[in-house]
Length: 383
Image 1 (cartoon, rainbow, N blue to C red):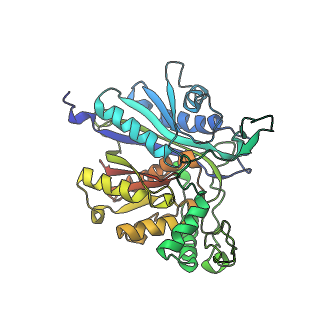
Image 2 (cartoon, rainbow, N blue to C red):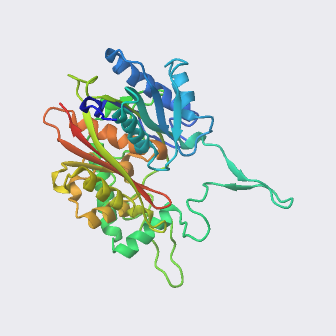
Image 3 (tube, rainbow, N blue to C red):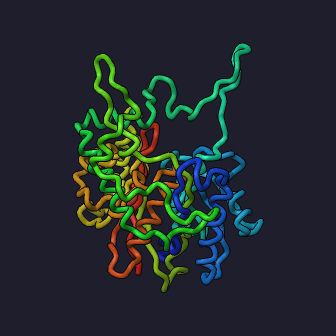
């Protein structure tokens, strides 16, 4: 089938909730109840398009099941005729949801999709392996990222390993984290936030988190052993466990004519070593740039999920990125990392900057993913 250029996918609305610290402002707000107000706000913003919503695609990692996207769409009052599907690519879920929406728009199969992600760490259900040989069920905090035979480190331990292997010291990590807090504290994010449960501001941001203060924190994941030094990853130079939601409207360039929009130039996913999942964005970004023909030097602003400072710095070193172009208004270290939503939050952040008068023309979003994967998306200011 020859696909018309008018099917080029664009983002025409981008909203998010505030990002809450788990157990605080959204302590009793389930994933669907967190996503629904954001869906409703985006649907209202695009109502002038006078176009039916074809689907809702939401990323989610640890929700209650039951198709969070469909439940959220119904709670948002989108109508029983609007379906929903939930995506799990772990920390890349929200970005993958938008990539799937873009692919379906590009094909001509759909005209308007609401896509993004949501995570409620506060209300995620407890999970248990079933009893074996009459023993008690065993509770677990996460399922395996990989099958037996592969290294399957927790993300914090893997971030410590990555820092050690790549020679990224504690001082450099703390300096990057301090920059994230300072930049986020200097910003007003209110235009992109939908108030949910009376929470209208990001809860984790602290204006006084200097490198000196961060340097006093103890390593969180890797204690000193007989033959190994203590790790360098702390609660200060890594993200917090968080709640949040983000939604973007993806439609055709033809439908969006005359509206501020970001054109989705392409996306890519890639696999990498499960032992060092923080490097996952590298092959995904390389694949995306090869696919689109865009060079890194052409990209003016970059959002990488700041799960850990060591991860962002390792990716930056590997690709030769200018660190000042990464998360110029702070990132997940300062704001929090609601896993299933974080990739979509990156796009909301890009839209907020790029659609301002004189904003950057090209933007990149990328996430590292547990189990050794990466995902990346390239967007361009269309108006």
